[in-house]
Length: 212
Picture 1 (cartoon, rainbow, N blue to C red):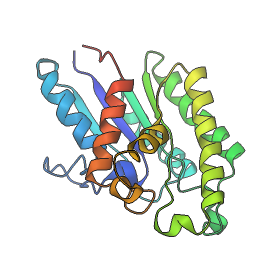
Picture 2 (picture 1 turned 180 degrees about the vertical axis):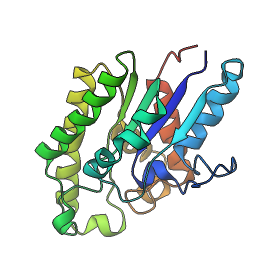
Picture 3 (picture 1 turned 180 degrees about the horizontal axis):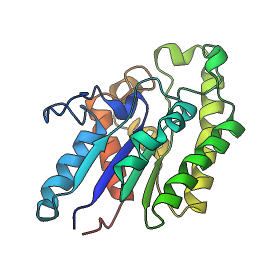
């Protein structure tokens, strides 16, 4: 039986994905593509399906606003979510800021509706992450504090909902021992090709074993 994977989130998940059925671009050029490439080849006999529905600039409230069409309607067996960086209320966010308590409230709605639709759903929650590169350096303490608060929310939700958790910040913090921050996240938020490979590897390590 084929397994359907749905990836949701913001620009990091979007990865420049196409909006047509062009197989060259439909999954984008980031961690989602790398995960699908590995699992699609490894489990070819089951012909798993992969859907990337990340949208650049989305906050958790934006993801929720399109939840029926871009998640539930796809009937996922596995649901992966990476969101949180866009709503962090740093000085540059203004009216687009989403305070951590609201972030958690809306995130719970997303998960509750997904689990109500499919009680057997397998969930993978990815921590938001940031490094002090470029514009992130100017208000680094604010970025660090707010993104940390959202990671704490994701950790709670992963435990409560029995989800696999991808500790993305830990991955990038450890990677700093090998190369500088901008090698992994070119602007402190968006991964380079090498950073996307780290994300894909961490995701695959968290999501194990893969259902047949």
